[in-house]
Length: 79
Image (cartoon, rainbow, N blue to C red; front, side, top):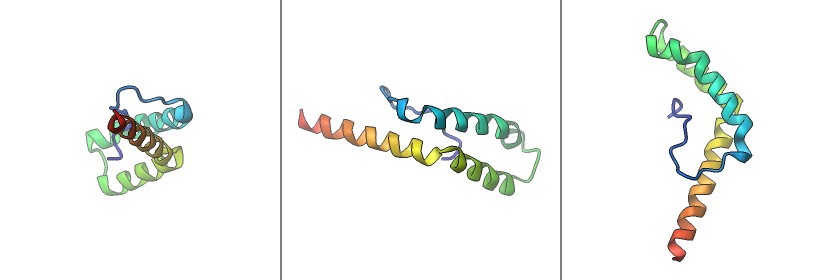
């Protein structure tokens, strides 16, 4: 989901998306308390959070992770 910014893939090369990861981590920190504490109506907060993650480059991170995973699978299947 949108809350998952930490990439669980061992060996993920974040070089191509370092700036986007940093930007998304900043957004995550900004919204963490609001989301976890439930201090506000969650629906508008989550929409705003999602929009800010998109603006910070989360889609590029997801695409890069998917690309690397696909390459990993292709190489694994060759063995």
